[in-house]
Length: 257
Image 1 (tube, rainbow, N blue to C red):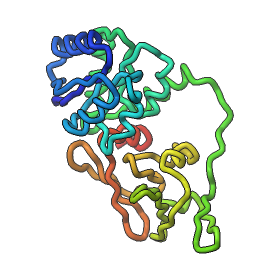
Image 2: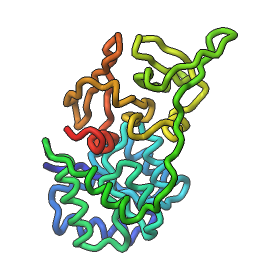
Image 3: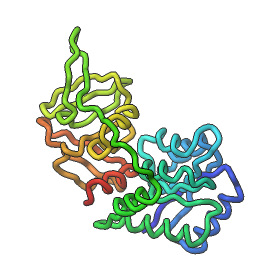
Image 4: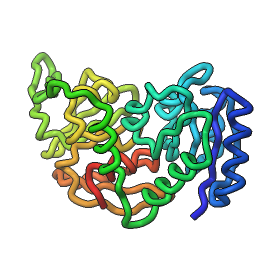
């Protein structure tokens, strides 16, 4: 399998080194463009729509995480940076891997092998690797308290919706909509990013820049075009939700398929 790939790093020698290592040992990685800033990266990724991006984290204009947030359908990502303090955030961003600079041939080969495993049909060990990583580096913490009910306005009233009754949230036309098992929809006073932090991440997963889905509502997962998937929900209207290619690894880590 080949991967159309973009390299993003504001350090030109680092980009050249990475390109040499890829060209020397990984012919399946086809470099289709390079960018030196967050702004350039967003423009290039929107234009090229690659399968994969090697993405530095500290960039001019905005960082690597913000680059992915600005894309409707982000590609698979392997983060590269000189600072290991970003490791946990990189994994939480559903990246394929995290490689410290200067990039060495063996660590690059490890990342490419992981890419192959996660994109090969029927194979997925991201959840196991992520749990091993968290066990080594994440200090024990008190269990966070997540929202159990969400208030929505209906005229002059505030209606309380049980989170368990929510199938998904979707941002569109400058509003965020809540959808229930009964097929009803309401406008909520939260952004998708805010909801992502305030809802249990084992239950609610971001599958697209504008969509957050309750995994308990997913009844079927179908392969879709260009590495994407389609979710069929169990609500009254059998809603169909497309999972972007860049968000698919996170979904697979929670529901291996």
